[in-house]
Length: 400
Image (tube, rainbow, N blue to C red):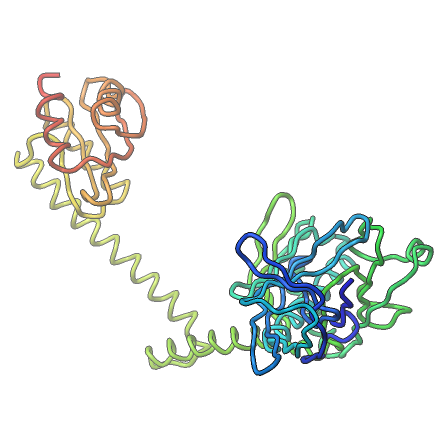
């Protein structure tokens, strides 16, 4: 079995060891190592990458994965590499350190958040994913309010500030039975516990196989970015350490640029944005009223035969008003369609003293229109073009 150096010394960046096996499978090349500093993909965290150097050559370690029966404690590790290495070769393992450190910061931060959620609110972590490109996520089995999440983030950063120790231990089966810890797993092999803080009164104790930082202070900062309700629980998205600093720095730069573009201070931006939103709403209302008047004037002047079809963005109220006007000046079925040939059209349709539901059946049959309504009016959407709508009205709706 490969000796897992990363469990005992997560800060070891280089290691000289021996390749114990080399083989190909499914078009990929694999090796096994006598000892390893490369963490395999396990427990919601990606595998370490790096290289093996020997005899002036460098072979990339692409991935690492567990093999064997975890339930019986019989597991080993194989590493995918980009070219073969003969068994017995002495190699120098070099870890992609920046990537490893980033993952340790975020995984240790996740333990802090999950431990606090359990201690303060009594909820359990039931899902965790550490991505290199997206925020880290954890799911707990209870609902967290906005106020509770604010308290959680503050407490988590207090734990970072206090620079609590993060240690691992390997209790016997007998000892394990008397311990209280998160993520209890039933395996035949040795369970590894990660403890944050003093053993007598820890912030968190959790079964975990991954590398961690040595002290919470090494995380730097924990920033919760968002929350969402999922299946009776709560999903939190967050970042820790370097990635959190980069996220905050990026967003502060965006805020600064936005404030500079309006020649105002950053603290005035929310009020300014709300003012612009209100002005935009008012302008839309005025424009909507103007558009509606223009179309209604053309309807009353008799310029429209058949339905009104426009690429103008009409509100539901505008469409209802135009439809009502059309039914007053039109014999037979009529309607108003707002949209474009590329995106499709939203419609209101029907006819005075006619059953609009019959028109709806016809439109569903001939134009694949979707929607519904009452005998007075139907509404919905169609992907047909303007020309096809006019053709339908001319051939199918006249004299009905």
